[in-house]
Image (cartoon, rainbow over all chains, first blue to last red; front, side):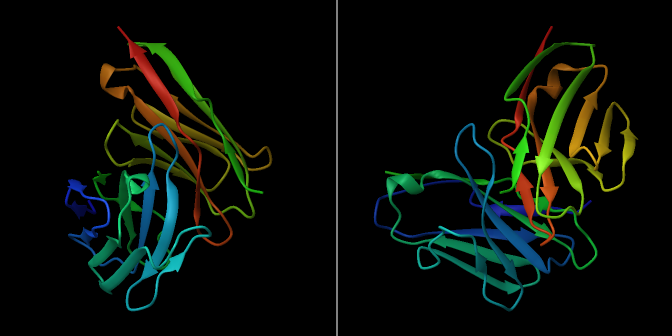
Length: 116
Length: 109
């Protein structure tokens, strides 16, 4: 089956620093990747949608200059949280969709970010 | 606005059957998904319904009624490992997934 990996699985960083999270589709080409964040006991919140080779589409209320998304290839997307603050601490999950006509999203295992 | 409703929490007994309901109001409809999410982990795909009716897959079945904006996930022969959150998500007219808040299912021996 389709596998999506995320790295790192957990990261602790100091306030004001930047953190990069990688999302890779291991056995398929992902034309579209999605980035979500999830707070405890809450639903997934879509942050942005990225298509390979083009700029990401951010959801309303998500700061594009703070959450930098790069979908450089069909198997890799990165999310960089710049100038992190404690309120950015959350569970970040990526998912990938294989191509047009396919609706299923395959999820990565998630990254737990803690900003101290 | 778009809205997905499902119960916050349910409790069931090992070996029993449980039905988790989901009602939705979205701009357009391109299918409904059920995902399972264990604590601290990412969601895993369970089912996809785009036509009315019941889809059965092993111990899990999912039902959809588009006219009623309603779906349910039926879990049979419950096992302790089924303790998890179950997320209902609808794909809208823009092919975006709209997520429910999830139903936490607690299985008791």
